[in-house]
Length: 283
Image 1 (cartoon, helix red, strand yellow):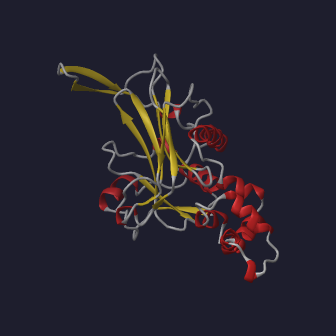
Image 2 (image 1 turned 180 degrees about the vertical axis):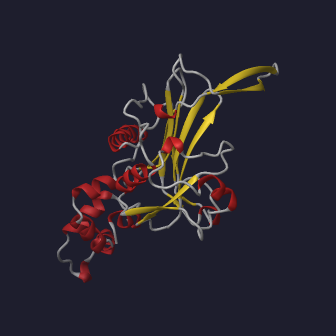
Image 3 (image 1 turned 60 degrees about the vertical axis):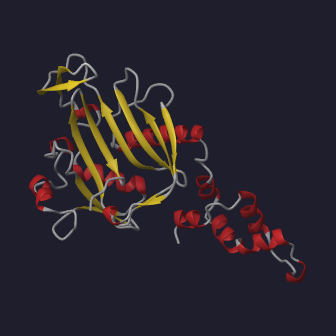
C-alpha cells in the first residue's frame, strides 16, 4: 500500500480522529465509549499513516480550499518549469480567474478505467495575458493531473497561415492567423524522452513507454501520425494532428490504472496550445 492509496482509503476521516487513533495504546473493550470505538476502527490505518511521516499527512489535508488550490497550483507550475516541462518564461499574472471543485469520478471504458481524482480546476484564462491555462490539482497529493496551456504570439511574430471565419451575432467574416510559437510554451530543444522522463519524475513513476502496436490506442490513424516518433524527437517537431482528434499517448510504469496519458500541441487561430494529462477519452 503506497501513501496515496492509504490516503484515498482514509478520505473523509476527521484529522483529530486520525491523530487520536495513532495515540491509543490500550482500551478496555468493556468500557469503550462509542467515539473511542470509532477511533479503534481506524487505529491500524492511522498508525500506518503516522509511520509515513508528517509530510504524507500534510499532503492529505493540503488542498482543501480554493485559496490553497491556487497556492499549490503556482508551486506545481514552478516545479514544471524547473523540470523543463514548461518554458522558463511561462507565468500567469494576477489571481486565478476561476477555481472549480471537481468530484472524484471514474472515466469508464472510454478512458480504460481511469480514475479522475477529487480535484480543483484552477484557471487563468481571461484578460490580455500572453499565457493562460487550466489545471486540475489533485486534492490529496497536490499534483497536476491535467494541464491545458495556451500562449499568444508576440506582436512582431510572423503568421504561418490564415483562416476566414464567420463569427458573432452580425455574422461578419474575419481573417484569423495561425502561428507556430510553440517554443513560448516548451523549451525549443526539449525531446519526447526528456519530457516523458520529467513527467515520470514529477508523478513518481519509474519509467515510460510510447504507445505501440498492440495497444488499443494504436490505430491506423495514430500510426499515420506518430509511427516515426521516438525519444530523440523534439517535442516541437512531433507531427501533431491539426484536427485535434489524435494525440501522442504514453504509458508510465507505476501507474496503477495503466491507462495512457496524452500530449498534444495544437495551433488555434491566434494562439498555440499544449495539453498534458489523464483527462482525455482514448478508447
